[in-house]
Every structure is written in C-alpha cells, then in structure tokens.
Length: 142
Image (cartoon, rainbow, N blue to C red; front, side):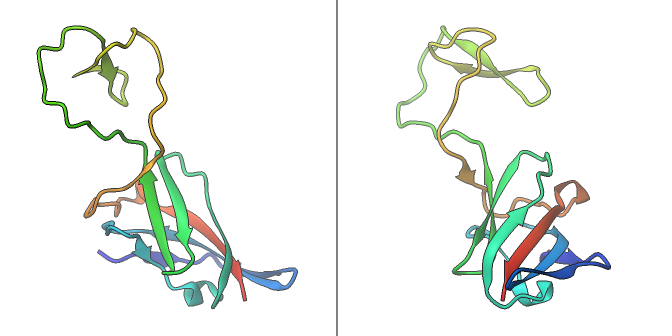
C-alpha cells in the first residue's frame, strides 16, 4: 500500500518567505530507504524544513531531502557474531508490555535500563497502514 495524505481544510499557509503545508500521512507498507512523499501535495516544491508530530508510536522520523522520502527509525539492537552458548547470568529483557521475555542480556542487573546504539532504519515491508501509525507532517519551502 502506498502512502496516503489527508489535508485539513487549513493545510496551507505562509511563514516568512516560505510556504507551509501540513497534512496527516499514512505511510502504508514501509520500503527500505523511506516512503516517497510528493512535496507538491503539500503546496511546496523544494523542502527546506520538515517536522513530524510527536505521535507516541515509538518510531522516529526523518525527511530525506535528496530523495523526498520519509524515513522511519526504531530502537533496536544488532547481535554480534558470537554463537549462542550456555548463558546463565544476566537479567531477562522486558517486552513493551512489561512482561519478561525469554531473552537474557548477559552481565546485566535486574530492573535496570540500559542504553543501546543509535536508532536503526525500520525493516523493509513492515506494515504501517494501521491508523495507529498516522503521522502529521509539516513541510516548509518554496
């Protein structure tokens, strides 16, 4: 499913020398490299600034100025190349709902939050078509 855009009745305006377009976007099924968004649909041909509503769905968003795409990022970890062994120490990792998973993080303490690496681009073909994932985008440009 391709991205779809819903524009409110007051979706365009002017901010200093720039035109501004605001809309609600459903990104559909994510494709590696981002989901194409046509700035012209927002009344802008060249984008100089993009902002995304703080929708609390756990994703981070970035505008790819070169390719005119919305890129989606998610917190994640990358596993190392060491084969699994008899791991007996470390706490279980919590799922989003607060329940313990079967994944144990070696050398960790219970009830402790650890920071991971930077966010990673969302995997290819993840379905974001549920309205839960709708985001508001503001594009400014000329």
